[in-house]
Each structure stands twice: as structure tokens, then as C-alpha cells.
Amino acid sequence: MNFKLPEDRIFIIPLLGAPGIKLSRTTLKENLTDWSIQLKTIRLLMERFQPDGVFPFKDLTVEAEALGSEINFPEYGNPYVTGHFIETEDDLKVIQSRYKGLSGRMPVFIKVVEKLAKDYSNFSLIKGAYAIGPFTLAGQMMGISKLCMNVILNAGLAHKLIEFTTKVIKDYIKAFLDAGAEIVAILEPSAVMLSPDQFDEFSGKYLSYLVKELKAPLILHICGNSSHLLKKMPHTGAKALSLDSPVNLKEASKVVSEEIILMGNLAPVKIFLQSTPDEVAEATLALLDETKDIKNFILSSGCDIPSETPLENIEAFMKAGRKFGAKTSPLI
Amino acid sequence: MVVLKEISEALILGKTKKVKDLIDQALKEGINPIEILDKALIPGMNVVGEKFKKGEYFIPEVLIAAKAMNEGMRFIKPLITQTGAAYASKVCIGTVRGDIHDIGKNLVAIMLEGAGFQIIDLGVNVAPEKFVEVAKNEGVDIVAMSALLTTTMLAMREVIKALKEAGIREKVKVMIGGAPVTQRYADEIGADGYAPDAASAVEKAKELIGRN
Image (cartoon, rainbow over all chains, first blue to last red; front, side):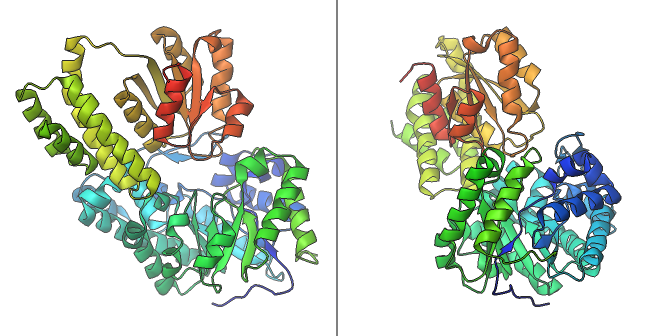
């Protein structure tokens, strides 16, 4: 699959989802467990903000839950993994033997992606999906502190676990592609803790395997300040790098080949959540000015926009972005 | 005192067993446990903090060093208590409700403990009422909160509100940290201090209780 960004406008894809619960008057939990509710919320978000890409909600517990991890699911917050940690190779074997492919809430998200791909098949929008990264999923299965320590103390066990999580992620992404997704964003937040060499060995290597096996464009998203990994991330073969707000995109573009799309990176909390619409517009224009020489660029938020974000701020972001770049919205 | 230097070096490399063996050796040589803490473990952990700041160390290296520090402390702590050294101040620390990320929180706790603070670690997913209860009953000087998620950091405001409602806000200092947290956010919710990393958190804590 091959796609190029159009040259006549700047693509704008804020990492939406959670703020949509205000539009559909639903809870986060309802959206993350019921495909029809999530679909309704995403449609409302698309109507209201008209971004250039359509993605489902972001949920970092779907894969771990499908593998049997315990999840805490508060009604109004994000779910999180609470237990079921792999300590030994035998623990891993048990989990492996139980794995039978897609399960848990994976079908919820696949269904949403399938419906959205149909909804927007006639629009030049990026139809996307999210999956967790292999290192991050392994961290949920083992406990992230333990996994980080095993990177040094027991690399053999760490690799066996990450090989397995990579296989699970491959199956999940394959299902998204079959459902009509054109690109999948891999969320690998825990990799930000690794050194460049550790990243290559315990995350990058597995990401390039996914790129090769799936033959589909992937977006690699790492939260936080990933500046130290910028030289390594392109080796994964990812089509785009989605960089969080602490990374300077202009500096990043000097390190990353211009064929790779850079995506980012207005601060989700400091700007989207805590500023006024005027401040959001100002920050957006400043970001667009800073990134104007980047050949392949998608204007986005640095990370997931919190659900409490005022909708006027998201509107201000889209409006400022359109003024600078796109002539028309792809939905009109 | 070659052995003190060796303890530091083993700690910096995260060699837990070697740290314990060397502490054992130092004690047999008659070295005071407070001296082991002050001249071997704390300087070692400070080097780890500096290496992390400079980008020579990353979280895996810091974690195995912190583990070695922790084991070393566990080993000598009972001996220090016996000699009657008093703790300077009490800190209760926890990751706020809805958030289970504890790497940063644990590092701050270890660094503070190394700097002589008494730590009450409340763990993760800590309800506001729990912070209040412990602050009240244990007479803590500092309430320290951590959050990694943009969504959960909002719970910090609730804790401050709960401290106010319990009438003890003025009795404690509140410090906050975690990846999405900023000085601006700290100001906005009325926290007394913010620190961007574990080493700075120690400085901030000392500043808050007037030890600098």
C-alpha cells in the first residue's frame, strides 16, 4: 500500500477520541466497550472538527486484556492493567498456550474501524487504527519496571516475551487492515525509557519485523521526549513518526529523512487542555511556522487529547491550521 | 576506606549482590552504617542521577542502580535506627488515583530516603482520602504526588482540595511531578513545588522544608 500526502494542503489530524464523549454524552467506558456507541461518538467528532484522518478511540489495555491481564475500568477514566505479571519463562508459556487469536474487546475496535472505513470511503481521509507497541505490551505483561531491568539482567527472557507480544500485535493489525484501515499507528510509549541501542534491540527490531510482515504503512508514536531515539526510529521502516510535544520538530526534521512523515505536536495538556482558544490558535500558527520547511508533515497533537479539553480549543486548532494550510476540508 | 568507594562503584553499575557483600565487609571493618549511607550509597546514587541527566544512563540502568540502593538501605537501616539517628522530615508519597505508573514515584522515594527523609510510600492508585488520612495521622511534612497520564494528573487538584477540607493544607507542603506535569499546572492547582526529575525533587523537598 502506498499513499502520499497531497501537496496543496496540510493534513490536520489531532489525536481525538476522548473529547468526543462530550458530544455524544456518553462515558469513556461506554465508548471503549460498545462499538455502536464509539462509532456514534467518532462520527460526531468528524462532523464537528472535520479532520483529515479518522481513527477509533485510543485504548492501551485492549491487547493486554485479550491476553488475560486484569484491567481496572473506571466509568469516567481510562482503563489500566492491574496485574497478571509474567515473571518466568513458564508463566510466559502458559499465556502463550492460551492465546487463540483475537479476543476480548479487540472485535469492538475492529468493528469501529470497519464501519468508519465504509463511512468515509469516498473522502480523501486517512483511515487509521491504533495498536500497542511490542515493548509496551511486554511491559504490561511483566510489569514495566521488571521489563526495564530485564533489558539488562535477563535479556533472553525479555526477548522471548517481546517476540510473543509482537505476534499478538501482528494478528491484531492484520485484522484492522482486513477491515479497511489504510494505516496503523503503533503506540509504543514505554520505549521512551530506553537508550538508543536498547530501543533498537528491544523495540525497533520488532517494529521493523511488523513493517516487513504486514507490508502496510505504520505510524510510530512514542510519548514524551523521544529526541534521543530520532536517529533510530526511521530504521523501523515506519511511514510516519508521531512525536510528542517535548520534541522539537524542526530539529527532528534535520535527523529524519524527508521521505518519512513527521506528525505532531501541539501540547495536549499545556495547550489543548489548559489554554484559551486564542492561545491555542497562536500556538498552532507558531508550530506551523516552525514546521513550514518540513516536506512531509501532518499537523497533530503531541499525544492523546484529554477528555476534559474544551471543544472550542480543538476548534481553534483546526481553524488556525486550515487558515495556514488547507484550502478546504476534505469532508465538504 | 577503599571499600566505601567500591560500594559506590558497584551501586552505580547496579550490582545488588556486590553492594550487599561490600556493605557486609565494611561493617566488619568497623565502619559506621551512617558513614556507609553518607559516603557510599548517597554519593553513588547522585552519580546515577547525574548520568541520567547527561543522557549517559537511561531508565533500565537507573532502575537496577536504584534496586541496589534499596537493598543496601534495607540492610543498613535497622543498624542506623539502633544508633539513634533521627530522620529530618516525613514525606508521604504516592501515584494518584487512576494511575498505576510508579517508576518515577519509586525513584523519587529512594532519592528522598537517601537524602535523609522518612518515607511513607502509599503506592499507586492512591485515593485523595488516603493522602489526607496519612498526612493527618502520621504528621507528615510533605505530601508528594506523581502522575504519568494527562488524564490522571487532574486528580492532584482533588487531593489539594481534600487537604483543605480536612483543615490541614497549611500544615503540609505539597509537591507534584510526572511527565505531563508542569510548573504552570502546579501553580494553577496551588501546589507548593514541582520538580521535573528525581534529583531535582530532592532539592525541591529540601527547599520546601527550609533545609537549603
